[in-house]
Length: 215
Image (cartoon, rainbow, N blue to C red; front, side, top):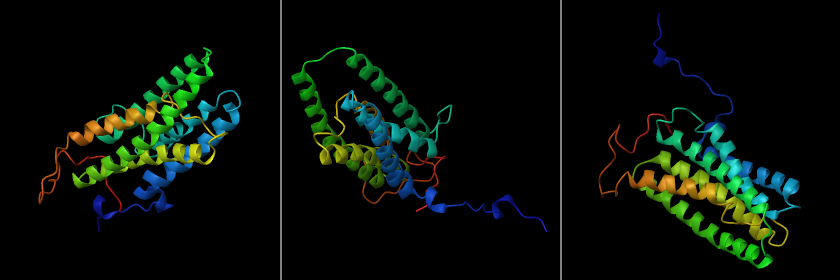
């Protein structure tokens, strides 16, 4: 008796690790919190702004698990991790350059205030983008948007709980998350405005051959 390859279903250990809720919400938030704690403990004494890079670093590590860093990045899910990674490199370079110059205390406080005000707006936009992606028929883009939103939420929660001693949010530290939002915005916009009563056809623009949801 011969078995076709489609009859063999591999069993995955720890199946919850492959669940979209874990990949898009719990894992980015957990890794973002750990990276924020590590950076704030290691570099926070010199500059509290370094701690705000923790969620972006955690997002890169979460994307290393899913969807992964594949090259060439042909699918939508494969492009975003590289964009976040490049944004993180650019933000760290900008932070190092800014740290080499002595800025007035008032300017630093104003920059932190702008970052603290911009983060809730970015978080709301990412949540709205995830909802719009679901309505447009792309669970893939919705999951990616939730990953970025979960990372941004870690920064916001930490800065709100420890306002005086926690990480200082700046515009530079938000650069990787902003780059991810703009990339996702372009991807979702390419889906078009959802029309009532229409469903995305298999193989259409809303589908991704590298994504098989396990809801």
